[in-house]
Amino acid sequence: IRQLEQAYKAKLLDRSAKSVELTPAGEVLFEYAEKLLRLRDESVQVVADRGNVVQGPVVFGANEATCLYLLPDIFAEFQQKHPLVHISIYRNFSHKILQRVEDGSVDVGIVTMPVKSPNLRVHSIYKDRLRFMVSSRNPLAHRSKITLEEVASQPLIFPRTGYTRQVLDKLFRPYRSRIHVAMELPSVGMIKRFVQADAGVSFISESFARDYVKAGEVKLLNVEGVDLWRELGLIYRRDRSLPRAAQALIGLIRERKPSESSMAAAS
Image 1 (tube, rainbow, N blue to C red):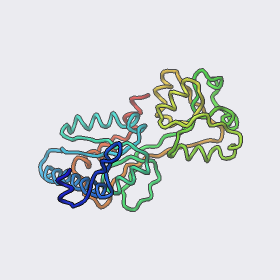
Image 2: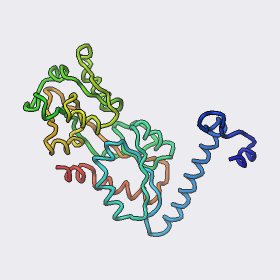
Image 3: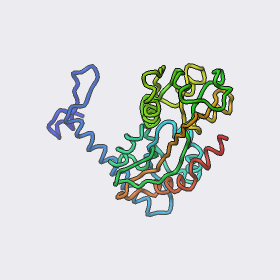
């Protein structure tokens, strides 16, 4: 580090703090270093692509629920076909994944639709219904259908942020003076677990709850007059020459859409 500081004639690390931190100059240099590493990986991949073997790194962006419930079977098949490819998962919310795909630090991503960026190619790959979820212990569990007003009287568990949160905020806007949001949780897994324990009720993508439904731990109910859907899109840069490994992964995901693989395994 000191050699770099001498070469750049700038202080790169602040060593006076309790933990060592980058200075503004250090942050700038770090950004360039990341770009150089990406260029190095890209050059290695371009040279490798001239051969017949699909190999090299792919940085893939998706949120936690998509990784857990929709992609494992597809990625397992891909690794069997292309064992020399190394996939690195960038896990975040859709808007963050969009930014990373646009700036080139993520090769391919799956995000919630719609996507309006003119810089990206977008392929719709999956549609899933948002369903009302209650614990099997909840008195509502014996019902097949309820009203939204009845839902609004329950202790609600909402995701802290993201597309589903936006949809639920809009759905319950007419009841906002009456609803009780008992909890805001950061992940689908936590929401399922707390609903299963009957700490509250929530809405969830149907496919994400099928393991708990199959085990008899929660029940999904229809809400009168409510028909909510979530659509996922596969995104990558229009103007970027993707490495062969990324192209192969895109091809497999489009061929084996999550609805045809993971959902078949879950049902």
